[in-house]
Image 1 (cartoon, rainbow, N blue to C red):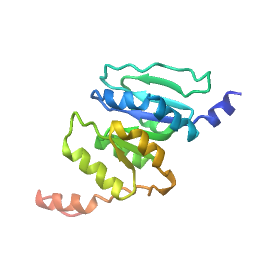
Image 2 (image 1 turned 90 degrees about the vertical axis):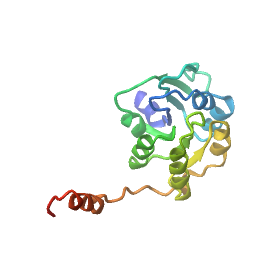
Image 3 (image 1 turned 90 degrees about the horizontal axis):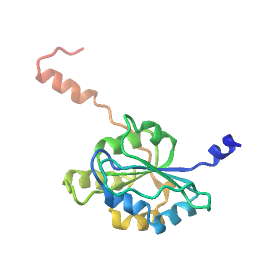
Length: 176
């Protein structure tokens, strides 16, 4: 029975990184967002909430709702990302590229309280290339409603070898 249950499990993993991003946590636990995730066949919502002070209500899903759980930190989130059907992430480059390299559909939510423009610029550029969806906490529901995951283009990491060779030459290291 447990194997059949796991086969049907469709996890949405939410990560806020190491900071506090209560606006994202609050957005993903709204009834509108949870209803949309259920419509899309999702069954579980796991939230990595960092240093946040808003603690969502855990739910076992017995009433047909999403199973909701959370934790603050983990030494690695890679296993959570691997097991996810969808990742909703803060706009940190590490989380973005880790998710894209693992080939998971991704919605990036910008923390407007931190508003370091490079995060917005990165998210916008990757959305323009159709690698992810980009939104803000207050528009997450609309993004979920309109998104077409099958239209996302897989991300292929670039080859850093040419740049490394230029740096090596500049530093006086011989070519291999």
